Length: 182
Image 1 (cartoon, rainbow, N blue to C red):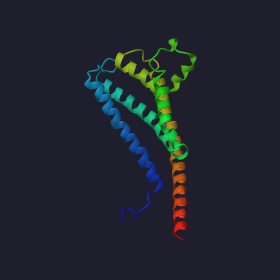
Image 2: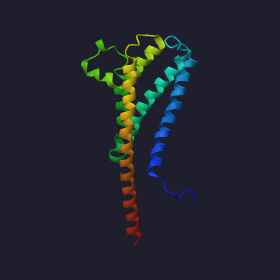
Image 3: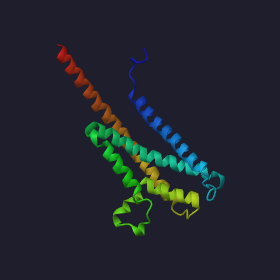
Image 4: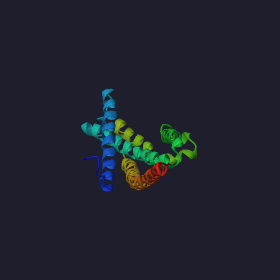
């Protein structure tokens, strides 16, 4: 009986992280191939490796942004499940709104964009596609990598909390059904 065995905590965590990374890997490949299908020139800055750099930039960005969404989905499911849709809209707007306007034209409020993964991915994409100044590309990739590392550490603890809370809820529900029977 395969279904009767319990999944070990370490195996479950490894499955969650690996499956997320693989999913973002394929989604970013499809997204990058769509750009290639529209014949966007990717060889200006890095030659024929431009597509790979573009793909890996998209993968890192999707991993950073997707991990934040996973954390929010876990925590909001536990405490405020009805707010998940509102949070998702807030997250998309807060990532996209400061990205496409030059900083000189925006209010100081939008300076938070320097620390967000979508802005840094946008800057990297400009460098890849248009061969703009590459002086701060390492800074941009570093910020995206920091988001990935920090959010995956937080996700580990959120998954652990989610498992504990949901198992408590399941035990309480089982006790209630036993009390009703008895």
